[in-house]
Amino acid sequence: MEQKLKELAQEALSKVASAQDLKELNDIRVSYLGKKGPITEVLRGMGKLSAEERPKIGALANQVRAEIAEQIEKKQKQLEEAAIEKQLKEEAIDVTLPGRPVKNGNAHPLTKIIEEIEDLFISMGYQVAEGQEVETDYYNFEALNLPKDHPARDMQDSFYITEEILLRTHTSPIQARTMEKHKGKGPVKIICPGKVYRRDNDDATHSHQFTQIEGLVVDENIRMSDLKGTLEVFAKRFFGEDREIRLRPSFFPFTEPSVEMDISCKICHGKGCSVCKGTGWIEILGAGMVHPNVLEMAGFDSKKYTGFAFGMGPERIAMLKYGIDDIRHFYTNDIRFLKQFSIHES
Ligand code: DAH
Figure 1 (cartoon, helix red, strand yellow):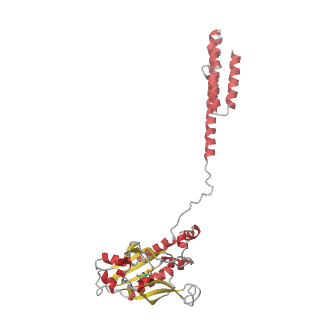
Figure 2 (cartoon, protein in one colour):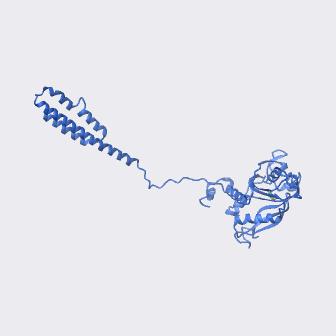
Figure 3 (tube, rainbow, N blue to C red):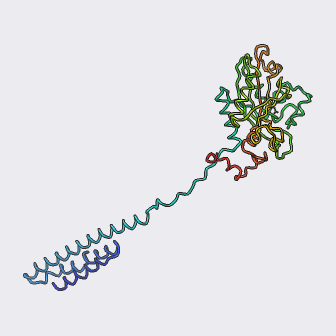
């Protein structure tokens, strides 16, 4: 019996030593130390032993069982540690791998230009006003000194919805609407960006829908020199301190006198080149002193109040600023075009 126990011990210990995983180890534990295992069986059969042998074999059986249990426990710890180690290795994150870049969107170049222009005027004390794209004939034309059948209406071929309602052809109606809200009391100092619509055939320089920014200042003692100074600040801040401006006489029914503002050509600085078509100047916007009729119709006393107004096209300004040669690029949303105006690149 003693021999048998020793053999059992050896056999069990060698199995424990070579166990590959926790399951196998548990099977060994059950088969050697369990109730139906060989050691229990030996102990059960002890009744048949002589009185001298019994304590000896009993002690040996207990020792073998303790020895096997101890080795199983040791092996279990080893296997558990190895399992954790393996898991850690498998789940390890390689922090040296380069990250996957996240694609960022960016503001549309027109939005950017409009916001830059807004910011500049806000810094000079202007407020941003908005109007409506579906406008009445009254605000789009009549309140701006363009009565029905006025020939200047032809300058802006319009999309009429009914006889009296149309898609606004310019942002100037916001002038009349804002002045009415002020109920004859100055100062008014606004900048108004928005979409406008004209019955033009689309080509490199025309679009049936485009954007404008309107400016209006009404107060006591507003003079032409205020307009000129304001436009000069705008031109230099926006296009560069080295740019000159000039005002040319022009005509708009809602301003008197009316002017068009040019800036000196960036390429040739006034000498004349292909960009400025040999003139040395590039046309930027229309402006003038608010016509007394426009002030009066909107409820302002034109003897007390004067004002200036200007209107510009952000597309044209963006085209000049960034050297874009076709207005349609703004509307066709080619990602290769739009990406060039990402904040990371400008
Ligand atoms: N509304 C004019 C246009 O669309 C632009 C313009 C010219 C606006 C002179 C003004 C201005 O406020 O004073 O052609």
